[in-house]
Image (cartoon, rainbow, N blue to C red; front, side, top):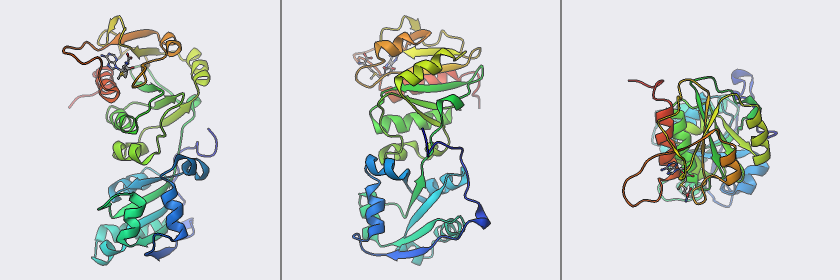
Length: 289
Ligand code: SAM
């Protein structure tokens, strides 16, 4: 990964040039058009930007040190005297982000839904290099083979965050982690869990130098998922594609293939559910109330 692979960094507060505030009422305004275009992967790739809906999530992103480029806020909510929104606007301007005070129509057009949130942030995306992923004994990371569903990926990122996983590695042709549906489903965890994109060959090369255990999950796995000693080794949980499961090549790269026993008629578990079951089992020793 290139330009958008970097450590989280906060724009340099007082040193940053203050952002500008603009009022926009028309959906045909070029700034609105550019922001709306971020619904398409091509535009996210070209600009390195993505959308985050909701003030809480925008504030989470700022807190985590991600670079906010533009904050779009509801002019009506600002005029209604929302303190939290007013503070967010000054904070965004202080960090050098532009602020758009938008009409309801503009917010609806950007969010592509009725009753949108009163704030939408445009952030610079961040990815982590595979070489930077460090998993110590007792720790866990997740790899996903060609995950296709944005809701699944978002839910997995949220669960990885909740269980203290060190990273989520997207292997092969995966859905974009910065798609709006994915970001929505992460509920803010997009800012908390390092995300890595790797081609199959790159992953296999990294795998050859990985000292821990790769635990693949497979419908034909011969080992019960509770059997491996997750507390002892560094573990990479490897989950398969929603339709096809792990490819033969990726299954062959695993140290062990485990299965979650099932009752009833379902062929398999949903990918995000299976990942949740695996993560909580692998982190059982580390998590307590
Ligand atoms: N038809 C696919 C197959 O046969 O592999 C089903 C894929 S399943 C919907 C998606 C992924 O969730 C699987 O590749 C595996 O990683 C995980 N998974 C779902 N149910 C599982 C189970 N009972 N045991 C182990 N892994 C499971």
